[in-house]
Length: 213
Image (cartoon, rainbow, N blue to C red; front, side, top):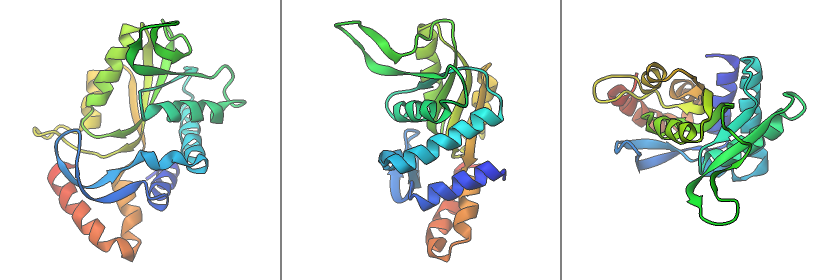
């Protein structure tokens, strides 16, 4: 576990972004936990997460200067991270897409920087099945944008029914880099150190043994 991954994992638990219950994922799987990014509605929490993204981008020397946020959850991530990088990464800007093209005024499917023939950093919340990556790639390609990096906050480390690890599959299917700030394994390691989470840990481990690497 890297230092950054450990800090992000602790933050996810402390900020109660991970919630427990019975949830149906986009993949149709029934999960005992869910990452609720709507809890980043406080400026303090959003700023903390944005600075984690910014730290990663700077650490990896990612050269692209446009941050793309897929609607809807990626929108605040892109804007907040661009602000966090202001002054540290000259020329940084942001853009996000609309779910549907605007039919009046300036029209268009994106708001923000012009992405045509421009390298982009895509910021997303969670990697589960990888389907969102394909959807985002298609939207960006339609606008002639070029994704160089796709960064999620959390990798759930799930495998598909054939046993293929989602994040690795996405890497193999694309030419851009795909990475995560932290993983479910690192989050689970934080939770194991807290006796109050013993029952949640038990249920998570049962799920992980079935669906995850």
